View 1 (cartoon, rainbow, N blue to C red):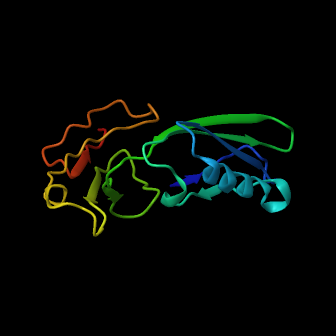
View 2 (cartoon, rainbow, N blue to C red; view 1 turned 90 degrees about the vertical axis):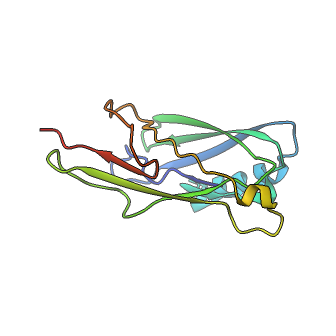
Amino acid sequence: LKLDAGSTSGSGGRRMEFNYTVKCSGGGCANVTKTLEEANEANGGYGSHTVTIPSSAMPLGAKMTFKLRARNFLGESSFKALTVAKLGYPAPVVSIQGSNPRETTYSDELVLRADAALPEMACVSDSLSDAKMTYVWSEVTGKYTGSLSTTNPRILRIASEE
């Protein structure tokens, strides 16, 4: 699991302080807490904006709520929380083809293509390896209010505004 606050803004070009915490239902998150504490101590105590938590550190079936506090040089803070559940079976690896971030103009159509596959693992049963993938597109910022319906579920086309 990769937690990335690299696009956080508001520091006026100065160093920002990052602090990650976790609340874990069911317990067993000592390794996750340790990983976050090490990231918080990095960069002279300012913390790391990116934290990678290995799958082996997260207990199976645990529901973890991660909270990030970003603080600028004036002491102003902002918080963001994210809840993650570690599944008892492999989740698909999903990627959007092309560059990140994407830039386009109002007069150009935006086309996004998704690839998804189960990770290659010896423990994946035949019933899972032949499972049909379902693609659902969503926009999470609320800035785009147009249609996300598509004829090909792997390709999202957002028409230009004329």
